[in-house]
View (cartoon, rainbow, N blue to C red):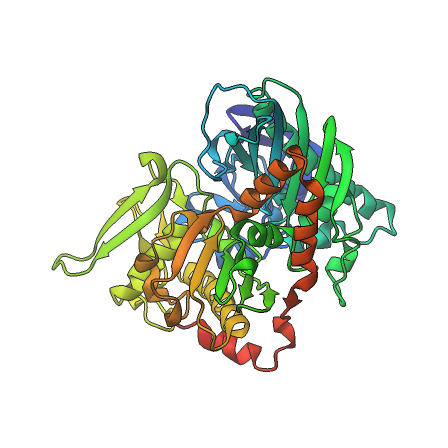
Length: 519
């Protein structure tokens, strides 16, 4: 059979490959050693793995037509995961993956000081999308500070944007193939963490005394090389959710404990940092607005926890023009619908850079503004004039909010709102701590039209940033100063006293969820 020639443009490099007609582009790139990101695991569910053919674009298939606009198709854009090569062509596969330098690990303010400390340690939060780390210095007299922070993408996301995709990719250790896939994911995260440790370690004037790692249950299982098959099927049992101590990266390493398959060490770490269970006679809620939508509520006596499938939208995933919180990401949106000549849209980006996409706060504000101006109704339906192509946020109409984007927001919002109502009930909290990178820059007044939170939360929300990493920093400081046993005892108390509310077991959950999707 005659071979065809494929010109690949990738990171400013041009490579020509030969293959047989009918070869899948996904397989060709994998065979040639190229890295590509498949947010849904390459199953054709998300429409995010876009590539652009500059010559010889294949005929658009059903999925292309479902996810791509007519303009994109005309420009040669196709979905990588389902692209079949039929003739000589040239394709640009440069993605929009953020570099490690672009992603900032938000903790308590890092000092960037040159002061020398007696001991050093690093705290790490393994997120599904990003990994954050902090270098901590501690003096013999107990003085401590965060010297520097660093962050980067979790390169596991190339096989899927959420934990379900990764569990599906690497579960079932009974076969050699799946064991190899688990090892592959583990090596990816170890390499990512190693790079952050190397970067931060340059700021330390001595050896590292300890490393503390936190993250959701799936991320910590992969980090430790534990079987994750049980996390993806009933009864959803983790292999081990306890404190784990070992030697790694040249020093002693401790992982924080979790609660269940769906409520992990990251929320335990946040509870430990915010100290909500020691606020007697106060009702306090911790909400971590990440992919898993974990939340904890202390009613003054008892601690209840749950998680809800919010999806990746709070981190800019699953959106047609979505991006992480990197320079150039649209983070503020204002729409003025009072003008006679149409709508005036004002946007702000991180770092004041040229806009490259919408991060979590950006898409939330955009949709809230669409609802406020009547461009989208309370059911989430866009006005007729914007239904097909979406509402443009930039003059060149390259960045738009589509009908599908709004539906993704509704799914995330519905999940969070329903989870909160089930967890809190009629007990209006005295304080609401909103954690996660999304919560860090959230202006609650600017998103009120999408009704993300119940009305009883008004005026009670406080952003606390990455509470998981801050909790890991707190534990690290205790370990370095010789108070490890007391600190671990407090952590175990949190994980053991928590009662998990399983939303799937609630009879009226589906009806409540559908109702909560409305704005």
